Image (cartoon, rainbow, N blue to C red; front, side, top):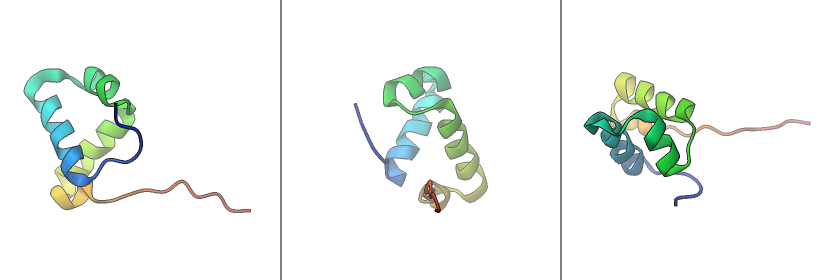
Length: 63
């Protein structure tokens, strides 16, 4: 399946699968993302709409 980052339109399509009844657990497994990630996407979409799905986060380490 998909490895790496999803763009905003892909995230929206994934969230729509959850809304259609696939469920968070099954969707997370299907797309190989954590349930936490899906909940974060849902929250951002609720708060900011489509633009919220365009937000990217980075794990930065500083030495």
